[in-house]
Image (tube, rainbow, N blue to C red):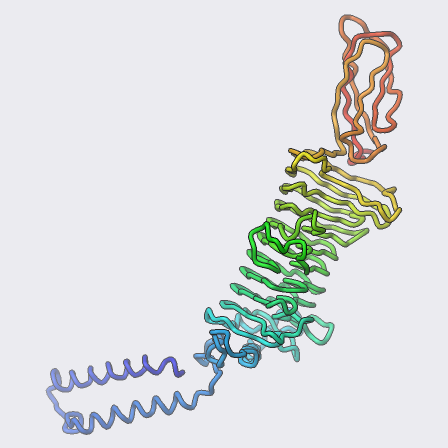
Length: 479
């Protein structure tokens, strides 16, 4: 209301000027009372005093209009310069926003509809000394926090996150919460954003830096979307001298049905950690910490039932680690700087794995594009429907589950060796071959051996011929 005072004064002045003009220029019926200058000045003074009285009666911290659902941080006394602590002011603004409920409507059962209520940070930078938390007395949703920066104070608790969607109960309390256009500086005091047991949360256009635990933590709940964001512990553009000491996790997901798209993770020990099923990652650029320093771009820790898709992403000197993957799809991605896919054995299970249509680029030092970690002594023995094919490789060693080869010989035996390209060391599931003989000869021939990833064909008589072979380790589509 205070911010509207100048506008109302101008409107009142304009109105009085119009009255004055009408009474003096156009009226044929002058009134002594309205032509009295002293009386007119008294009326104006009384009107201004009324406006001041109304403005003074408006409580500090209320939104700018009784009908508006947009709450402004500065109206609650928050300091947009980041000098003073704004925790209490921002927390009060959030509490007031959660009062603005639409009666008679709700989202999920027990979650009230706030009608699109917003807390606008007005482009300021606000220092906070404890997490900003949503009220958890009753569930609510359809709320947005946006438009500014948050800075952790030097005494911010190191085991917490700057913004926490976290209810003390285990029930689902929040739905359709949007965190947008935010810069979050954790000041090396804990994490950035925690989304716990929440439904349909959106994190959009956020820049999260200087965290020590997680840039974003997603735990439980359902359908959190992270998009168009930049996440990094240390601000850099690669080649940072501190890289070997990078720690923390860019995005830590422990739940199902989440999506990460068009996100850059530029420094952390692990770019994305995944525990849960039916998650999808699209357009992710990881250059968080090089594999040579022990970094991992995406670490999939959902053994036995993975159900994860990684599409059109960029792994920049850091790769993918998947533990006992079952239904994992990696496609359309670019692996630079010897980045590769590591399949790690826990119980020796690998099923429904597809690594197709990717590009790999290295420095010609003999790094394979797909590797196995069986260091715990559990070798992969359960292998089913694994397809590694149609990948383009430069400066690295191609590994595939489908290969073609040819061999010419003048004799009775032909052998094509696939051991250098096939992924599994001694596992040819299917062979198709053609023996193309020169001249008019028509020898009888037979497939003799497929052991050690070598295919051998013999004929009954010597002949000049070329053996063409197609082998497949996947068993996909075979009965």
